[in-house]
Figure 1: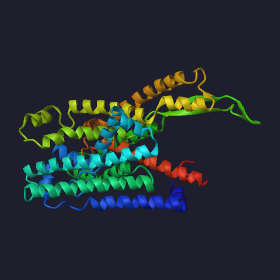
Figure 2: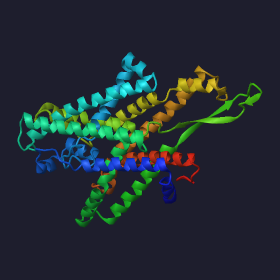
Figure 3: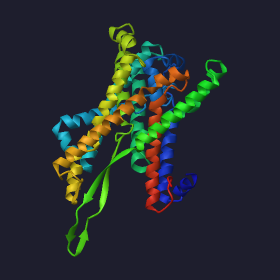
Amino acid sequence: MLGSFKQAFKVGDLRQKILFTLLMLLVFRLGAHIPVPGINAEAIQQLLRGQLFGFFDIISGGAFKRFSIFAMSITPYINASIIMQLLTIVIPKLEQLSKEGEEGRKVIAQYTRYGTVILAFIQAIGMSAALGRAGAVSSPGIGSYLIIAISLTAGTAFLMWVGEMITEKGIGNGISLIIFAGIVSRIPGQISGVGQELAGGIIGYSNILLFIILALLIIAAIIAVNEGQRRLPIQYAKRVVGRRLYGGQSSFLPLKINTAGVIPIIFAMSLMMFPATIGSWMSPSSGFNQFLNTYFHFGSISYNIVYFALIVFFTYFYVAIIFNPADVANNIKRYGGFIPGIRPGRPTAEYIDRILSRLTLVGGIFLGLIAILPNFVIAVTGVTSLWFGGTALLIVVGVALDTMKQIESHLLLRSYEGFVK
């Protein structure tokens, strides 16, 4: 693998893509240390113990702990993407745009950017007001709140641009890589926390060993599901074009178990932050906040049930957006192919849809279980410093595999030895 990585740097355009991606991630990590003016850092440390702000710090890769300009991370962009995809199904004009190819997608992407800025500003205003009530703003007032909101909104807009630049000119999905970098950046500090728990006698070496074993098993399961696929056999009929004979060979249509990747978890995670965000605008003693603290706090049974259900829903939703069985069936028919035992056209589309629905159910349940896994890992091992558990592992492993495959495809195009022998 190291030898192949060296080969990747010998390819001019691939080297530029990798270096550009690393440079953009470096900019992201540097920006995570630029503080927002007018914030009391000590008060922020106290707020990290709460549900909402502790969760923000996880998503932002520690940027909220320092309350930098990237404190909101790319959460508003994710929320805007969810809203735009829902509106694409509901509004005919947007649906038509989505079918107009590259130009239509550019228009929808522009709408998503506008929505990101609007949502980021609204979220930043609410966060500023919540911080002011908590005593984290040095000089509470409309002027201070506007400066904080504008700084946070600008940081989110800049991160959105960084993610799009990585996707366009770098390697991998830019938004996923930003989340990946944020999670990985927290690992050294969390390992230090495990060392403190060990030194304080809270846990023993047996707890750490059990945690490592569970982590390896989870990683193996994630890789197996991410790489698992159902191959539908396709037979191409023989046909004569001019004086040449085409077709007659067999192929297959790969349907992945986890077609949606980590996107459903990211979508569900963003939506689960909405109730706490709304609660931050209200008084801590309000009925809504009392309900959240009693029945819907992070880690509660009701919270995990809703989280699990949202992940399964978004798995189906995202697969339905990116994979159209009718289009696939028409393409197979157009090139003279058919699935043995299934008539071409609509029966083929229904057959593919039926198989895909079963695979999506398995993939959605797996994603949901991985997402709520930390509570069980903590209960079994007693290790709390690495509590991010399955969700972060899924994102890290999924993004790493996807990025590795993209590098692999570039190497194979140039007849270089890839990562996988």
